[in-house]
Image 1: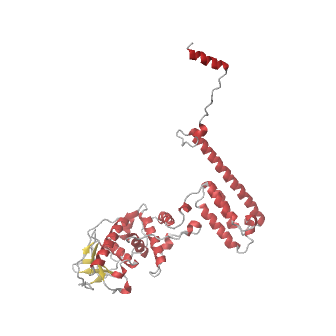
Image 2: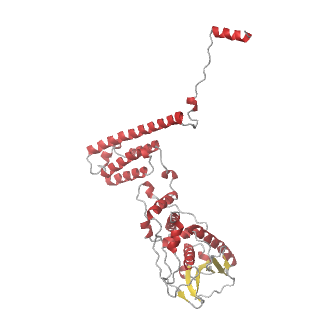
Image 3: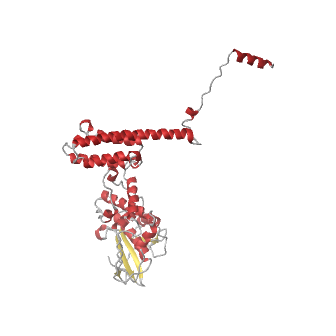
Length: 405
């Protein structure tokens, strides 16, 4: 996409109503349909507000983006179009052409956020004629468009890695092509994934500063700038961890699946996985002989791996051993597998025993050592009241005392 040098605007504006500025002056909207223009003006105010909140850019004094709302579909492909023009006086004009039919279209969000980023990049300065417009990656436009769009809702992002599958990586996502507009569901998932990635990066240590350095400002000495696909100041490893957590929260899965389990619950799920093995006595040694053993063993291993991600730390060694056994199941002889199954049974009993010992010790600490108690053991610690049993002598002394002698 190259800058167009024009003495006059290539498409004259034959619209009756003068441009109206958005709330913070980011957009100047014009159109012949007063009702549609007023409705779209409110949406533009939300776009600019969300954009500045997400990116951290201050409200500058650069010229507003001209948004032209057309009555009929006269744009290529029927979608919003972005134009960057150098006009008379060595000034810059950023214009977005939209029709009433596509005000809420995904292409409109992409063009509006792209225009806002270019407004920050040029900051009112006109580049050299024929210079190339910065071509930022598509994931940025999709993510920022999702976060800036009025009434946008996050899609439920499939998170199979919560159940043992390999988690996605940022490196793979950056080279992934955005779905076509015709597939709304996939596009919504892609947009939400990109939005979570942008949030994860902006919330990192370098955050907004590195993001704004990545977008940069126009350098007349080096106008043909090719931005990288990722801000250099963002640590991909730390951002990726935050990104996966954000997607897990928006996955539609039960939130309990991402919380730490207790020992009893961990062992209960461990037992359930083993009980669903269809062999006699749920034997792993016999599983390797079944038809489709490789697939069954893989599924079993995946479930144990998923359980390990949320297991209580005391049960981690048990799960590590059973996962290791699954990885070697096809190669080990049956006798060796049965020995390891016995070891797993003993280890499970040891985990249970250790858990009970820890609970008993904590109960003792609670009852005998803590200066401030929870009240759970007050009834047990309270000494029972004993009734005084008096004999004949005691009763005689009480009578004498009552007479005042």
